[in-house]
Length: 300
Length: 300
Image 1 (cartoon, rainbow over the protein chains, first blue to last red):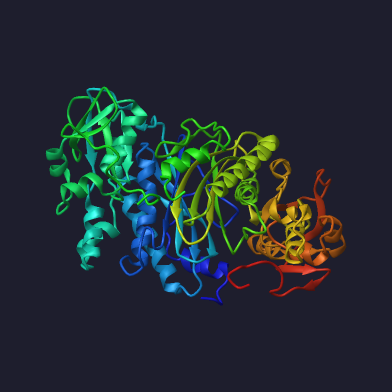
Image 2 (cartoon, rainbow over the protein chains, first blue to last red):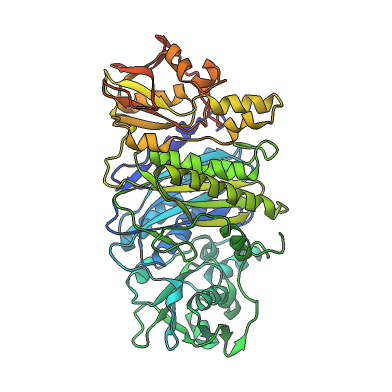
């Protein structure tokens, strides 16, 4: 690959990417998009040795995660994920096949999301040499006239509901750490955020669960000025098959959704995991967890 | 800094960032923007040891470049740069002061652009540990009802015009490599894309000059299906003070703008550097340059 120019490498990558629906597709200084409403933007980064290991995750798995981490952030606002740009760092000597596989993973994830909520494409990118593989994705979501759902909208009396594979990523990672590299570890390698369920839920508050249920619930509680009570029986019932209660409470990277819903019927595909109260902080079965629970790679 | 959480570090950074005009500011899963027209998006990455050295560029310089590289891409479409998100990799042991300085540089560059074309803010970010400093910026530009200006619009008979500090970055880099670390090297450390001039020019084709005049002219020629004739006397006259003809022809990272203009008056602030003809490729004073000229860190 040392003899390939950046333009040549882009040509290889672009063969594997989904067809763009952009008004001006990638290839110029910018892509130009025509959203139907306001736009939601967010960025999320994956770094080799921090977020993934190349012996545990294939290039396609890493491309998949790059898309899913980002589209979950858009869907958490009730924005339809419509476009991504991806900046990559590629170490000298990395096989061209890895970069191709990464592109295929981007494509597979975009196809999966497109089946749920409509077309999404990779509408730009940048590449550089560097000491480790790194992929920084940025998503553009289309509000399509909907009001954004913030973390700050939860009110006392609301139900706390969740959809997604709670604890699945932590459980898959535990399997990998135990030496089990089979398809069960895909729970870690291939998170599946249920974006269509997020776009349709009549929630007062919502967020992507990326750092663990307890840690992210604490953020919703702080933003909303409320207390959140988690019910361990309900959390265990909502957990992904195989995931322990601990994995369901503290495991990150599932990219499910946590929402506060006014009392009433719970939409299909969602599970009650707790309730919203006056006060502050997060409790599990009434006990204050203090600073425990969740993933922060700056302090871990 | 090892004891700071990601949330704590974000608090430090956010103290130095420009005030957001976003409908929903950073702090939720996404920021939400309300552009007046279609949106232009592009991403651009800076990697320690590839694009900058910490002994040559301050943290503020790197933040400045992160903004300028990206806003130039938006302006090259005639989109007003309105928002940025920035994903960062921060090595263990990097001083918090560096991250603060980087944030100040983002702010200084946003303030500089705001003076030219209106408010722009940092509306999101992500951070990770990793082996080298890395900053991936993504810009959102607002077309504000204007038609995007593509690279593919140049037509035989058009004038080739340029605005910006042509060859300045290469000249500043040469000074640094010769051991001169004074303010003259700011030509490299602090590129200044004239975004207001790009937004107002009635060009048929335009692009950001990021990889060198000859290399980028070749891209415009290929996209437009034309030949571009550069005139070395005019290029030398348009070059940044101190920059050699070679630096003006091949130096990258200036983030000026190259445009094809129908014959007629040249707008103030722009200089003629050549002309558009039927054919293919780029010539300088009539000579074919082959594959020479410009910056590609994959083959360099």
